[in-house]
Length: 297
Image (cartoon, rainbow, N blue to C red; front, top):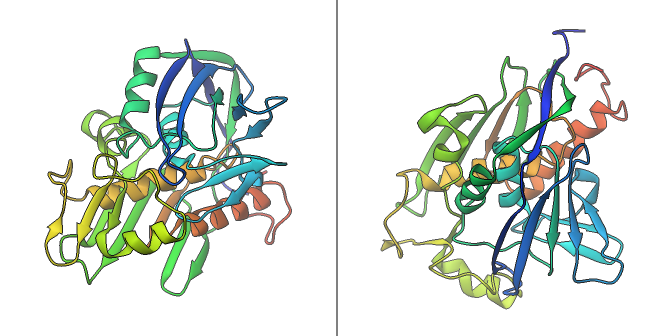
């Protein structure tokens, strides 16, 4: 069947962390508390609603992927979860109870940096339980026109992304690759977490008319104009946009329980394609998809 199954120690936070801010799409201010939750996985709790409904951070709970990823169960939902989930996954937090008092995770300054700083300050606690890590055996992918997200067999977990904005010279074509085993300047905390979300100036009005990006501003998102370039420089990296796309991909794929070891490769993709790949992986892991042996049991 391929390489032998590996295992990794599960981690949770040593103490709780908390941040407040405005949601990108709703414009609503919320406070998020992330608490230790040994062996419970990652899940959200809408503490502002009656009965405090629990929303699992797994791919089966995805209800919307328009310009962000939304999770929901019943009438309860939480939007724009990808940056926080990427920070937890990138920093090795497997188990976390995420309490939120509103419908959307705060955008903060547009990246995962503040979450990562809080996690680092809180530190991690190892649990005595381990999670299986199974290698992907055969390439799988999803695509729409020339955009795609693929998972390829690899000895380590790696994320590679490409974006192409031919009509926006300040962005253009960018590629970046990050391995989960990276250290120092190649670690998640330094290479991926600081990269901020970005948008195109000519699309803002149309998005606002659709009821989106109500909380967006030049303080929490990079905005680029087709002719004049970035409206709010400087960038934290020359290729900050594509690094942010990796941030989104890490967050979205963290919704797969025990994500297999693989090289995840994306080009011109979206939250929708990220989640389609996550759904396919989850089906294959549980033997619900064809072929059933893409991932070792």
